[in-house]
Amino acid sequence: MASQSGVGVNPKCLEAYQSLKLGKKIKYIIFGLSPDNTEIIVVKESQSPNYEDFLADLPEAEPRWAVYDFEYEKEGKRNKITFVSWSPDDSKIKQKMLFASSKDALRRSLVGVAVEIQATDYSEVAYESVLDKVSRGA
Image 1 (tube, rainbow, N blue to C red):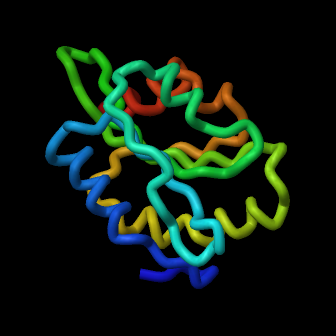
Image 2 (cartoon, rainbow, N blue to C red):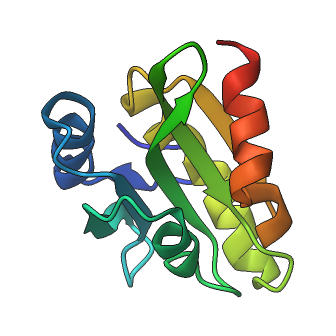
């Protein structure tokens, strides 16, 4: 599936997502663009339950997409698969535009995402901020 920008989604992205969603072996996945900007690829998969590790994997000046299996307490333990569109203010304009126009191809291929977050700085992906958005619809 190609996006408006012509960027495709690498099949490994869907394999990793299925592993997170069904296998529960992965806690989060970071996606980015291939070096030649022709496809969306998996940059990192992690089993770390530590939310701080996830934040550390979001680069300060480069856009990324991420899927995080967010676990929280509300009348018992719950999980929501959360899609993060990370586009920091310090990113290059051309890169931000390419990421913005490529997002839909990735987002549409990830069936079962419960919450979507768009973030331009770390305060918007802070644990409490995400917890607030995730637990609202629960």
